[in-house]
Image (cartoon, rainbow, N blue to C red; front, side):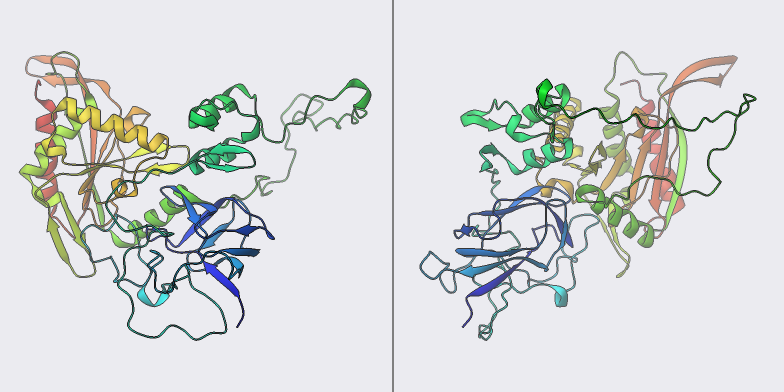
Length: 467
C-alpha cells in the first residue's frame, strides 16, 4: 500500500471557504514531525499555524506565500515514514468537518456562511482527508469535536500563539504576516521581545525608519558599482507649444494599475457585503441629535452607546436577529453592539458585550480593549460575531449622513455622522447648536417604519439629555 498521503486544508474554525498562505515552515524534500508547524494561514480574522498531520517527507506543497487555498483543497502531500511517530489509529485530532451545520445555531457568526454538509471534507485519523489505495475506515462516524486544526482538544480556553523560529528569526505568525505586508525583512529587524522574539512594535518601528526594507541591497563599494543606466527619455509634455493643455493619450485607455486579489479580511468583507445586499431589504431614516444641552466634556462614543441601549429598551424590535429563509425573528433581552473598526487590512466589527450593563467608564475601557486587540490582530474570532445591533461612527473621519449596511442576521445599524454647529430656529430668534447627524438603516422585513421611527426618536431624546 502506498505511503503517500495528501493533506487537505481544514475549516480553520470560522466557516470560511478559503485561507491565504502566509509562510511555509518547510520546503519540498524536508522531513517534518507529527504536529510540527507546517504553514501559517491567514483567514478573515487571524493568522493560524496549521500543524503537520503526519511524520514524514514533504513531497508537494500547494502554493506559495500569498496564494489563496480553498477549504478542502490539497494543501500538502507527504511520504509517511513508519519509523517516526504517527498518530494512533482512532486518536482524536480535532480535524473534523462533518458536524451538523451551524447556520441554525444562535451563536453563529454574523455574516458567515457554513458550507453545505455535502461539500465538507471528511477528515481521517491522520489529519485531513487522505488519498490512498486503501479502503475508507468502516463503522459509525465519530462525534464532531469542533473545527480546530491539529491535535488540540476542544475547550473554551483561550490559547496563545507561540513564536516559531523560521530562517533563524523568532516571531509569531501574525508578526510575520505584518512584516510581509509592510515589506520588512525580519532578518534585519532588531528584536526586543523575550528570548529574542520579534514583536509587532519591532516590525512597525523598522517599517517607519526604513532600517529593514525587504529586498534592499547592501551598500556597494565604488569599484563594484555598475555603470549608471542611461537616463530615461523625457516624458511627453501635457502642454502644446502654444502653452495650451493637450491630451497625451486617446480617451478610453485602460489604467495601468495592477489587479490585486482580495485576501484575508478584505476578501471576507466583500463576501459579507454581497450577502447582505442579496438578503436584506434596507430602509434608512435620518435626523439630527441636538447636543446643545450637554454639560461639560462628554465621551461621545459612550453617549452613543448609552443612547442605543435606551432605544433598544424602548423598541426591542430593532435589537433582534431575523432569519429571512424561515421568517423567524429573535428579539434579545441583552444588547451586544457591533462597533465598526476601520483598519488598513479591512473592516472589523468586534462586539461590545452586555452594553446595557456598562457605565460610561466601563464602556470606554471595553472599547479601548477591543480596538487594541483589532490593531494587533489578537482579538478572538468569537468576539467578531454574535452582536445584536451595530454602530458605525464614520463621522470621526467625515460625512454627515449615510446608508450603512445591515449584515444578517442583525436587523439594524446606526450611523453617526460628523458633528457640526448649525443655526437653529428657537422661540424668539435663532441660536447656534452643536448637532450630530444620525442615520438608522433597518431591515424592513423584520420591523415596521413606525418601530424604526420610534427607535430613532428614543435614541435622539437620550442623546439630547444634558448628562
